[in-house]
Image 1 (spheres, rainbow, N blue to C red):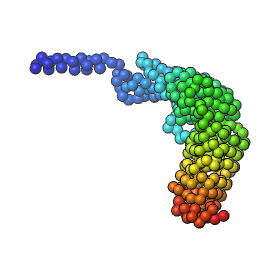
Image 2 (tube, one colour):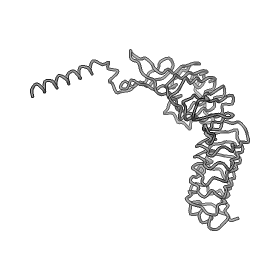
Image 3 (cartoon, rainbow, N blue to C red):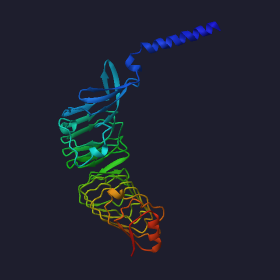
Image 4 (cartoon, helix red, strand yellow):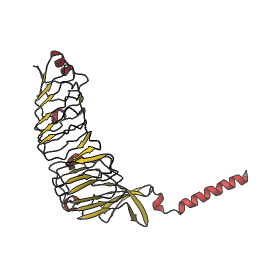
Length: 346
């Protein structure tokens, strides 16, 4: 028994000595922010990994995000890249009136290269001089929006990227995708699923936009913040529209709905200041959302052509809006759904 205890003690002592022999930076759990070659890194000394961002006071005209970086004799794997400070208010940064700070990357960056294996996220907004973005082979691109980059020339969707961000207010950009990408394809700067049945993002600068008949689904936020489009035509092939699909479209004035849609999702017309009237086809019997709520809905008239409403929520529809229906039954259902304004039978 004593021999066994001695053997166990020896093993424990060896393990302890092996641990203490490691560099302190490898076992310390606390992370640390450091700036290296114009890039801000959050280094995790426990995992040997780090995350990068351009959240620095003074930017450069050209920068590379590597897939590994050295600090105090140790090498760390760069797993994630955020364009800016991920704690910054996204709504503030994507504001149409946002002004980049002098000397910041948003004001001076012209070219960025992102190394193979780095995951890219967070909005890339208001980069006033940015012309070139090189994705060597990202681990993924998600949660990113390219917004107000007036000099951006091109965006290339690599083979392995499954989800691609929206592109807005980038008038010079040409969007292309790898022919080997099994998930996405690009037609006239708009991003679709490979089979063309899902419309993910509309970067079009047309004033009148007609969705292709091959499309069956409009993804969440597909038209979000597109300020060029004034009218939208949705063919009857479309059966589903995602949340806030037409949100914050500054100049949208009219929309023709597909007659195959049976329900409307949340915040469908949030902040569409020029959209005053919508006519809902007969099949739409479920209205889940609030069109943007009392503060962000500017509708004055809604025509509901359904003969019966199912689960609907109209509590946040502004009282000033008038709802037109075809029967007393639907009028009662609109009231039951929480609408406090005027309902007119026509």
